[in-house]
Image 1 (spheres, one colour):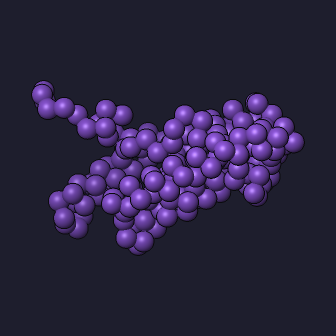
Image 2 (cartoon, rainbow, N blue to C red):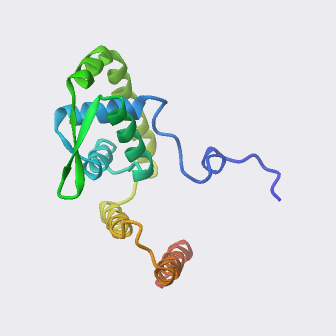
Length: 169
């Protein structure tokens, strides 16, 4: 067992640094939907672009927040080809206008976080490869057979080890 103090990354279960303060993501999603109605995946990509690719929120963070916004009647989600397309409601527009100063603070914190995360930035080719991997994993939509779980986990673990060791698989 280690006795050294653990870094923030390890304290948070290996999830990396906290990017948003409480309530920030809610305001950001609401403002992005106000700019342009879109699907959850599109919102993930738009946030990733705000961070110049240095951060990408997980679906496990985005979709519960969208559900909260929808249950709060700040947005509405309509089925569009099997995916929900979110639009802002009048209640959402009013809330967003009342939170203009807070939203400015969110955008300022994004700029600060983006500068901080750039120190860990990946080359564009690596960023795109990671994006492609995430897309491939999400395309299963929870339909994982036991054999597929073993196969993909082994493949990912071998790849991670090869990257860490500086060798090809």
